[in-house]
Image (cartoon, rainbow, N blue to C red; front, side):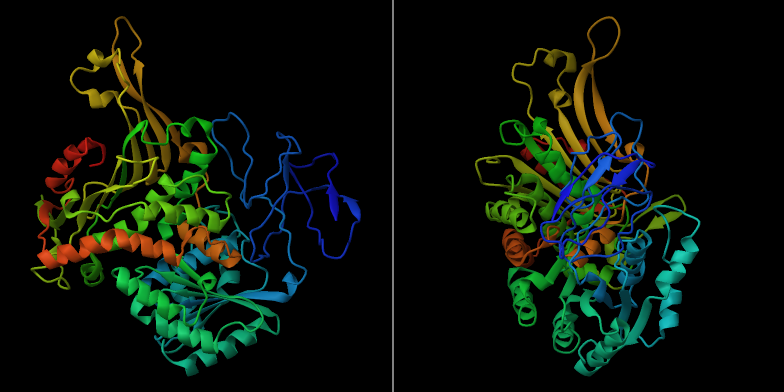
Length: 583
């Protein structure tokens, strides 16, 4: 069916196409114009949504073919984002007869309580879940559905848009939540779960999403039981798997092989929640929709790139888990390496998930394994400040006194291709540091023959332009430039061209888990890790990890709340990077 847009009077700020079923109307040409303040987009299709939008400040031919795209008004102090972003999805004809069941495995744990259930409520609150949905928590703990509701209700908030009906929406959401107790390796218990699911699905076509919020040693048992006893018979079944995905290349491949006995690759969604952060999502937009950055994004102009992830707290409460993995496996091999791949990849053929992931794999395969001489490792020690004492890493009762597990690592990596040859990529990740931050810092080369070098004295690094993408906290993108200070004489200053997101977009951004769970429901795989991508990432770090364990490399001690071990100064100087830029 052809749809022709015609002008019409607008009674609200935005005009939308009304939902229309295209499956039964042949070549009928229809003129549609519908103006409304609220659009029901509660139903969800497994494919990515397509939307047509028009705004009173934009021409009607401004058409978006990508989900959830918002056309912003020009030149304003800040941009108000509607509480419910308008879009009209095109659905399959049988969508109304389908239902979505979300099964949270490990529902009694902290991850489910603090992250997953709040993310699901936020999606429900924003009408992003389909009309027919059910949430079932599954764990070994014995409790009732009402007890589960009481537990998760303490973590639900209407933080994004505090409307008057918040309590009402919470009650509606909790009525959709149920609990089923069972063992993770019991096919009989999963068969009972299947019966409960079918009862809630009431004969509709069922789509089922399993979220594995459990330790990795339980993944295979749960997947086996779910595949044999509780998978959908007439719809799709998908499984979200939390990191860690193995401890090295061999164990990662073994885990993938075992999962693939019961699931296809398209059914496995390996989640890295940092890929759902707003500024990480914005990275590709920054690169590929702004002409100014295209020529600069290479070895010709960039001197080094730094990926920083620092936390101002230690491993309190996670000592046993962390001591088995360390900062390299916990942060660098997955979070930071994924962001590096997005930063360094070539322009994909399209925004299709496979096209983007293909380019990321090319970057990872262009990188040689990290060398021990390009790495500094540290471990925080306790200290006292006034009446407050901060425990060291080995003060944790679950950590041995002679543990060599690093809580800080700085490593230099190189991408061996034509675009990035010779450019050092510094990864810095640590716990118990002086500040909490996650950011990308792009340091550009000096201006050749700079006429103003003398105005900066001997500190030529001060004259270097730098692009900073701050992922958290206080999301921002800013560019450091040199300018003349107003007044007599010639005095130069370094200033920022700053896009502070909370000033420009005052409405709070969705949590990363909200975005990624919604992507999994829709079948959008762009922000999830493919098996060959995982292999390529482990190939970079596995040799280093084995060498460190074999040689028993002792980490350099640094004080809780400091900027990290002293050795990072020497690593930075080795690659011509100013340390104070990322401490």
